[in-house]
Image (cartoon, rainbow, N blue to C red):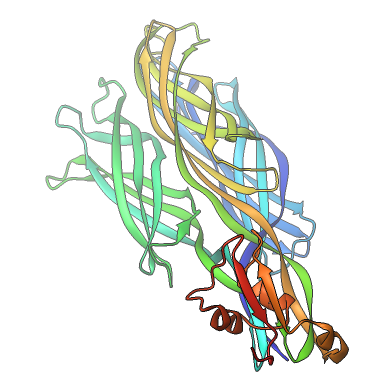
Amino acid sequence: MELLKKNIHMNKSKGKIISQITLDEDFNLPENKPDMNNILLKQAEILLESIKPSEEKVGLKGKLQFEVLYGTEGNVNSGENYTAFLPFDETINVPELEGNDHVQTKWEIEDMTVTLINSRKLRISAIVTFEVKVEALYEESAAYDVEEKNDIQTKSKVLDVVQMKLQKKDTYRLKDEMEIPSNKPNIDRLLWRELNLRSVECKPSADKLVISGEVVLFVIYKGEEEHIPIQWIEKNISFHGEVDAPNCNMSMISATTVSLVHKEIEAKPDSDGENRVISLDAVLELDMKLYEEESVEILSDMYSTTKEVIPKYGEACFESLLVKNVAKCKITDKIKSSEDSKILQICHSNGCVKIDRVMVEEDGLHVEGAISVSCLYMSADDKSPMGTFQGVVPFSHVIEAGNVTDDCTYELIPYVDQLATVMLGMDEVEVRAVITIDAFVLNKVVEPILTSVDIQPFDEKKRENMPGIVGYIVKPEDTIWDVAKRFCTTKEVIMETNGLQGEQLKAGERILVVKKGENL
């Protein structure tokens, strides 16, 4: 007898490796750049040029691109920018990594310091943390029927499982243009470009993944006339688009991470030939994971009234959906500037969210983390009219997930949804923020499954010793299939004998059980 089996596509985590590298280098200003007086703004990002998985290793090659905006000596209305790169080539040991595994790489710049050595030289130091997460697709095989039933009686059970349907990386390109307000001067050149993701959402549709959200564009530029102070513009740009996702449908569950991997922000002429338009060309990378929740029927037991059927069992691990939730956490706190300059006006603020700790509690997942906030401001100091300060705002939030345990697997994708800063005094700012945490929690279910069946001749002596007719009182845990197996008969015989319309039995009910082949 051959068991008919189906494959259930699962995804399992093979581990997560954290590795840190330190980058440190001195840079001399090019001859065409003016002397540095002070650092106004700094930003950096990791540009991964290649990710090469091999046997138990991942090679990461790329560069840290940093940019600084600095004030110039003797010109309070001006500023200058400087951009350079720190290359790296790192190998991270990842035990159990195999060629077909899915490798997800995240990075975070833990600390970056810019030190002015003199007016023509600066030092960049950065600590970069890489997180390499390895996942593998595998198939759990489960029997759902037998090829030739004949007189084989089977019992099935239904499992609610989550299957991995699609796992791939793709990109979404975002293009837009912004015309500067009429009260702003023409652009001579851009000094600072900044783009931040907000409110990202991914929804499965028919053969597509619909992505929507918002980016915050912030630029600082020098006007065409020398006496004009540094100008800045900020704009929220909404986007909505689609990415191909074969065989995707609306019932699927998305656990997709979106990150900004490339941006080009340039000034261009308007219809009158004046530099009054800012163009945006950005690339978002989508690490797509699409799951589908299905009810799968598998065999749980079998017997025969004419031969001895001995089923053999093994254990299989499945995953069921526990929680798919988008949690929002509101934060209000105050941060103080450590700078000597007094704040006259907040020009711009941005923030990034980091989850530091996740604890499994009775009512859900307790998440602790912080938003790192950076503020650019106009100061009362004529020698240094612009400045920045940073602060860290902690948060704590419980994502509701009833019945969550330490054995559950979860993925938390945090975004800054809203961020606003309000001046409270000349050295204090109130931070108001909303964090979105896209939570996807799976419960591990270990089930016994039929792996094979041993068929032997029926023990006729055992059969002869069984009563031909039995009056039976139904117990609370009894099913009609269990009673039929115990007394070597079938569900159909019991239903026909007792005039039952359905398979449901009630506790305490009295029924006649006739061994198959016996006559009343």
